[in-house]
Image (cartoon, rainbow, N blue to C red):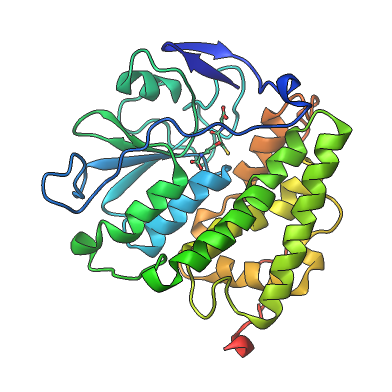
Length: 320
Ligand SMILES: N[C@@H](CCC(=O)N[C@@H](CS)C(=O)NCC(=O)O)C(=O)O
């Protein structure tokens, strides 16, 4: 794990000392937009954009799900990195279900960042949305990428399903804020904390937020009412990793998702939604976290369990 400083790779773990043992996530560094508009620098086009993902990463997972839901599989191609992220960060080393760099046959993901900007200073993260024409990065912020996928390719695909409808935008933003700070990023704050108090603070807020969401889902089929929105998919990618990884590896072990009746049925419904289970790779998920975070798990031993029951009936139909 490391970062690029002025275009040079440095192998360095997150610095939590400066902040009382707390993990602080950095802002994404490339934030351009694909826009279905006249004179856009990045217009929607077939066979022009490429997505670099890890199947282990919850942020990259959002973009893969949105690519499925919006019928973008033939329009946006994908390369999958190896789940083993060590001294060189994300790599294209061989591993089952990893594809290598299908565009340029590079060895390391950081080489794409330096191709875009030879002097960049940044963490090297997935997902990465790449423009094959201009040979540059459109965006490395998953929250933005899923919005581009949601709305900017409709003319090409004819798929007008809307996961960020204007009339729900405010509610979606509120739910996203709760889920992002306490749950999506909350599990990382717990897992990467290097003091007892930073860990306890993160885990307490995490379970308070999960309890709040459970209450909401007892009466309501989806987070923002009767239809799927991006808020659901953003929560899903953390839920599906929770019992397999965050519960043990990140010490988020007050309760499992399996102990929450509404949340676990909801998670199964999302998992069973057409196209979604193909985006879930529990081998990459478990192997990445347990093998790559050597300061959390120095032996790199990956646990065999837990047995997960993702295909049983979700029982959520009655909520309509
Ligand atoms: N804000 C980014 C965060 C992405 C992110 O942190 N990805 C992780 C993988 S789960 C990563 O690549 N980490 C490598 C690093 O921080 O050096 C997004 O949502 O797209």
